[in-house]
Length: 338
Ligand SMILES: [Zn+2]
Image (cartoon, rainbow, N blue to C red):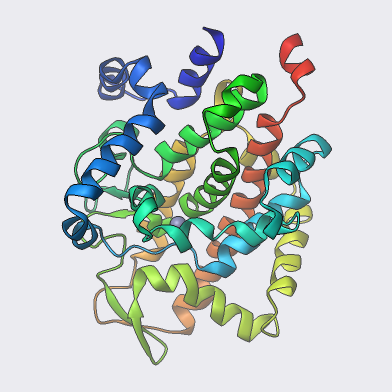
């Protein structure tokens, strides 16, 4: 079954070692393709049995704040092909009024809702403390050890759902493609927030209490919200669209030679979230965790040196989301010719 094989090749990145190879064979094709259904059934069962325990066990990990997700999706919309823009508009709920950015925080809004609690671990990856690297088979699981339940696994899964549905109309019935689009757009954003691929021991910086200037907060929240909030106030007249325009100017100016490298996925894969996650944990170690020990006060030195990292990650998230959607919604005739 060609689409299934194609879905599997989407699922896993090129393997870096024996571990990943073993993981690949052990998991098997069927397991990967039934990811969504299995996950839902399993998690629905768990949530039915131990709703309270589940909510206590899940770390309180947030996501890029609303502004970060809005910026990424707004940027991506500018780079969508005509075909992709048409397909996206078809899938968006009416309430979005054809604006993808308006629904990009939806997965954060519903993640604690009873029917969507299964989606909560899909926003991040916990990596081994102080290793500063990421491996899909080692790290992509939830706190119960269920494989694929992390942000990269979710990106592979929703990319595959949208791709299969675009190639074969009968698969549309199997999936909720509107939700798939909203989850994919959100998770591509999340995986670019460096602390969404952070250490297990501190819950991606959530348990590292710091001061952001005078305000008491935690390191994860600094990277989700505070750096962007402070930048809006200090440099962009508290106007998000001015900040987005500045990032867009950088994309077409100082980063213009990098865009094709950002977009590129090995072997013509549609998405390569393992690469985005590896970049994130590397940036987390070099910039997010550095000089941000528990109890520290983060001020101008930290803010001004980290803001360029945040702005570049928003740009990369937007450009890559557009590239993924453009690849997914390639006209069927061109897929047939390939
Ligand atoms: Zn999120």
